[in-house]
Image (cartoon, rainbow, N blue to C red):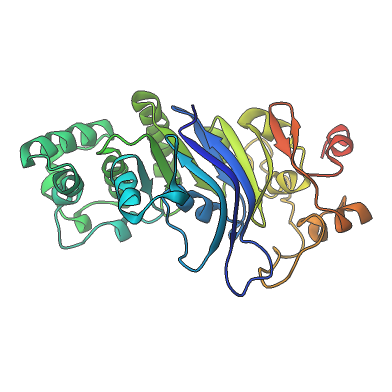
Length: 320
């Protein structure tokens, strides 16, 4: 059984001309990492927040969001609080916004266990020391304040905090964005190690395709609230089948082509205030035809993944 299952999730907000999330379907198994990739505004963060039941109150939502076999969209607020305390944890982009600058790190790490599970201070402290060691920090950090730690150390603290209740699912919302390249590599390696050690399912949200390839087993590429392509990480990056995936790869710097001019994706992402007809990427796609502009492509199973493109077979042969 998958730890996270999202099926045909559709979310519409007042004042928008189209759904913010339009039929999103994905799954994450125990001990598996799935990367959710796309431009800003594509719906990545909103999809990950759905796994916590954190959705706008005025949103119209349909579909299924199932964590450990239980549908979050049918839960009461009290039941949702239990899921957030014990089953699902999230690592946010900027660690400093997650911590109270007036409280010690030890209080931040142990508060949830002492409040939600009624653990003793000694037991919660032992768990905090165990996880600080797992993320490569000394237990003296427990007595320090956030301003005394570097950004990389704080992100390690938030990762330890997310693992305190031994969650079945870990959500990482661009956890390396605010870090330098060296620290990014350390955090990615740490998450990969912890996933294997604790068999935690990991949904990793990022705009960086190469970072996604480094950490994930499978990748889902989002555009305009839809998953336009998904599949095993290696296969998707070696042979993308959707023009948007290929365009993202072409606009990303690569060490094996250091002097190659980066490609630019023309145009702008579609505005939520404007209704769409046909493929949402058609206006920016160099391969678009009248069919693309008239009909929305269905998500088609292909080689262990899916692709939503009318011409994916032809484009695959041409080597997009």
